[in-house]
Length: 182
Image (cartoon, rainbow, N blue to C red; front, side, top):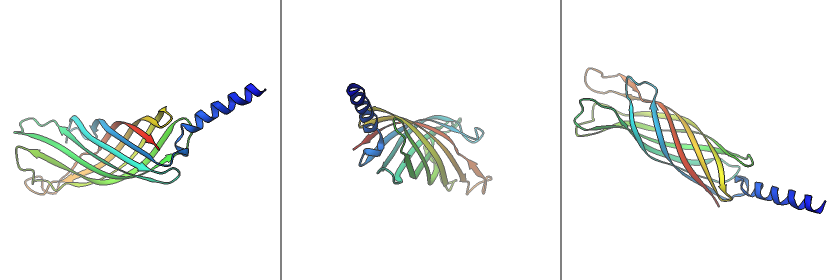
């Protein structure tokens, strides 16, 4: 009986120690892996780069920031065309043992960035997102997580024959990150 009690105590100590609920502070960094646009007539992705950062304390909402650029296929362009997105997030880390499940929302802006020509034909636009992240502890203080973001954004054209037209550059972003629990 004594061995069973010690085994249960040791197993539960390991499981509960690896959860976020006993950390004083959690910090997460990540990178986008892919970005697919909802309207492929407007833009097609050729790759994405950037970062995701979030910081919080257990049982309270945390804050975060996403900043990434997606290279857009642009046939006949003299330079590169990117969709630059910056988001400010509010998230909540659900207190579930063994896995780390995060849900969040964000708001920010998005715009086309051009290299090699003038990009003043657009005014940029606002962007919103909801996201979720699923993490598995790899050691008591670290977790590896995969995230999915659903982004809604439109960029308005301010000059030329397309003046007033709004290009839908919303879509889905997948990311990979690591979390630290102190």
